[in-house]
Amino acid sequence: MSTQEKQAWFVIWVIAAALVLYAALYALTRSLTISMAALSITALLGAQGLIGRKERKSGRIVADERDHEIGRTAGIVGWSVFWLFFVAAAMGPYFILGPNATLHITTSELTMVVYPAVLIVLLVRALVMIILYRKNHHA
Amino acid sequence: MPSKEVLKNRIRRLRFDHDELTQQELADKVGVTRQTIVALEAGDYNPSLMLAMRIASFFGVPLEEVFELEQQRCDDESS
Image (cartoon, rainbow over all chains, first blue to last red; front, side, top):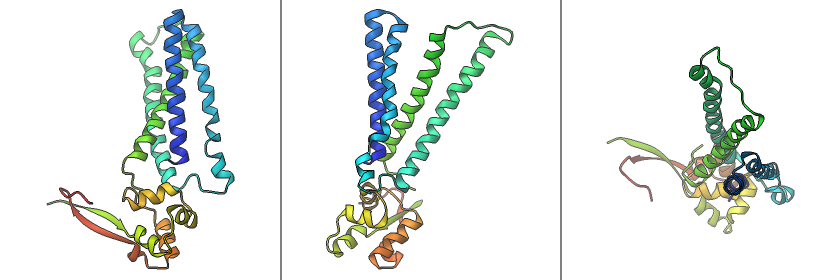
């Protein structure tokens, strides 16, 4: 398994763990605010760079043209998913509520919209990487 | 009957003919990961021109001796 594929699996497992913990906390507390503490696990995503550190230190190639091509394709799909979310979030209220409406949302509701959207983009990107690594991939 | 082009290679044979070079050793020599060599030998990945030239240059053979473009009928499954 290549370093990038290991990193993709790491992203999937961290986000899955955060979602499971979120669901468990909500089931126990019925509080969105408390359940959101589960999202703090996703801070581990910042440690992705540690994967493949041993290989990099030994001078071995950890990412080559095939990895870059897969990363590029996955990035395009992830960006497309982000764009769909962004357009829906930006234009949805306009068309649903009208141009002169006012929307009051709490900060926790804002966080619940923005943060999961970013997580979904990262998840989609990681899933596409896994699929491309497992399937035939041509440069 | 429609056909598609498939790039075949003899990397595995050339590797064995060169003192049974391992996939990792070949990967280190041409500057890629072992997984890319695995994908190349399985026919799951078509290399860039640069990588193809580096492989051919390493084995000391012309590019056409390493890679071959084959026409396959669309209802055929390559082995």
